[in-house]
Length: 149
Image (tube, rainbow, N blue to C red; front, side):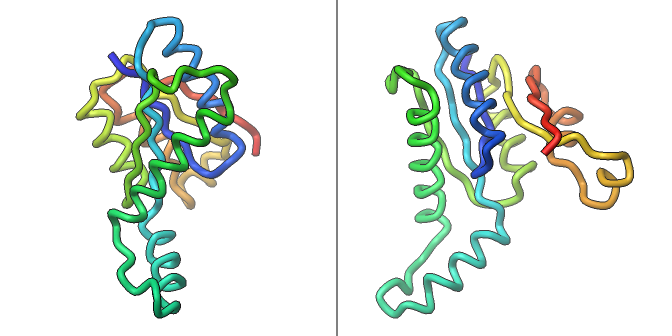
């Protein structure tokens, strides 16, 4: 069974990758590193890229491939000596929570490893909370690394 690590372009993801790598080594499982590019970030990036005439054919596929490359490089740069044969990097574009839950459902991982920030109940209600939605809706065990940032 794989270990699924949901990462983003945030420093908190380093702890997620380290925990997931430890679990993958412990259970001799594949580490699946998933980076989801939020749809609004994709749209902003697409607008920026398409303003350059040579790059008019920017697509979801290209952005997902870029997210996959980021995930792979992030793991290999974060965890010294991690066996790249034990790594399966993946990239997606869309709603972060939905994409992570979809990947978890398809993979049926041993663990889903995520990060989260401590927030007040009001902050969660106003801003939403991806970590909370993953904890409530994932059909696999979720390992969470909370931070105060």
